[in-house]
Length: 178
Image 1 (tube, rainbow, N blue to C red):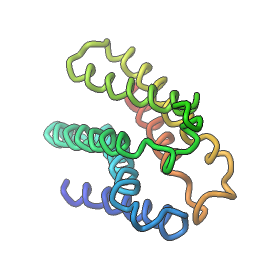
Image 2: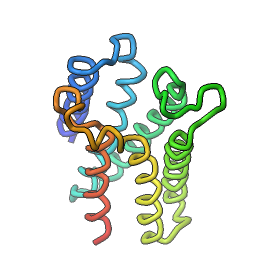
Image 3: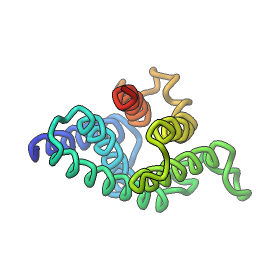
Image 4: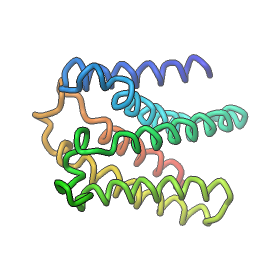
């Protein structure tokens, strides 16, 4: 399993560096916060998909822990990055968050809370899955829809990580729904 996790992290790292640094406008100084944040969440989403298709219960438990750690790191780094320099669309000049910024933050926050409650079996499984789907959709679609609809603007013709993550999440949801 270690080599599989290594492949997931390597793929996420190579993809993020190529898309954002080699082909995109992200400065080298932003590798450790901005790009690492992308690597953590993309790895978490890929591990979620791998976990749902894994057949070994011991492996599933370890993968669940990796997912929680990576999502926690994503949340921490995202909170450090939420400022107009990185996400100008999330703000209205000096007046606080824009509607888009509010949607991204509330969608992400509620999704994170749902994952915490899920660990305590707070919600019936079917409600949990649909609530997560609704709020992760709010989070990812409101953040990335502008870029998703303009493939000619994709850096290196590589789809945004938000789009890939959303598509992988939909696959995860469909598998988990069965």
